[in-house]
Amino acid sequence: MRKAYIAGNWKMNLTPSEGAAYASALKKACEQAGADVKIMIAPSFVSIPAVLDAVKGSDIIVAAQNMADHKSGAYTGEVSPLMLLDLGVKTVILGHSERRQYYGETNESINKKILLALELGMDVVYCVGETLEEREAGKLEEILSAQLAVGLKDVAPQDMSRITIAYEPVWAIGTGKTATPEDADDAHCFIRKTVASLYSKDIAEKLIIQYGGSVKAGNVKALMAKENIDGALVGGASLSVEQFLPIITYNK
Ligand code: PEP
Image 1 (spheres, rainbow, N blue to C red):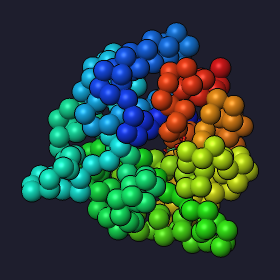
Image 2 (image 1 turned 90 degrees about the vertical axis):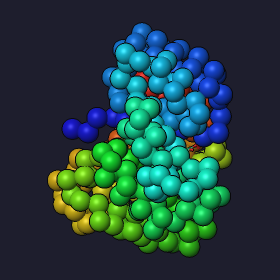
Image 3 (image 1 turned 120 degrees about the vertical axis):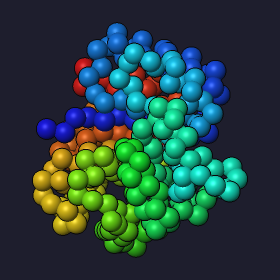
Image 4 (image 1 turned 135 degrees about the vertical axis):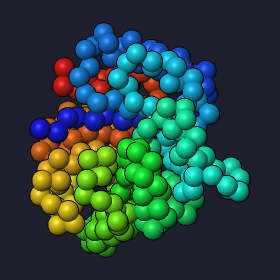
């Protein structure tokens, strides 16, 4: 049985004080609602300490949205995974399509980060997904296969329990367009099959695959009802507790 995993990616939104106020309100709201899913929020780097402080005593995971591919050194402007670990951050989102699109990240460079995060004992949410052009050109499976084979290259089978895959069709991110639950489930099913062939059926069966792309209170139930959809990575609708809470409590 895979436990539902709902995550909020704040992107470059919410200042440290806004983030702290949000996080304490979320903590309280989740307690009151009896939320029983795995919950993660990913603030910007500078908001992490305040947000960690605000969620103290709860099971809410505070993750980073990215990290450097080195432990330390002359990499101006980068944030080392060791710095994140020192704060108490054990989870990192890697390969988000905005990192690929605006900052030139590739399957190869993301693989380097994934291996480093795993080496340091961190959990990873690895984002994959196709652009509209790729989907329309019938390349969905080809793109996902490459993202999985290259992104997960040299990841040891025993480390796969620390990997979550987030399937995020690029055309559905921040656009208000959601993949239909059937389309999303098909892609998730393909991802699971691919992981089974790269690793084993058992590892694939245990793999948590989140869907991301304009998830909201109104569509989360239908998405989560699908066999292969185990959670959600939420952007826009994670920016307020009012919108995020109904997603977290979709099963209530
Ligand atoms: C995201 O950024 O991962 C995302 C899915 O964004 P949105 O929910 O706004 O489409």
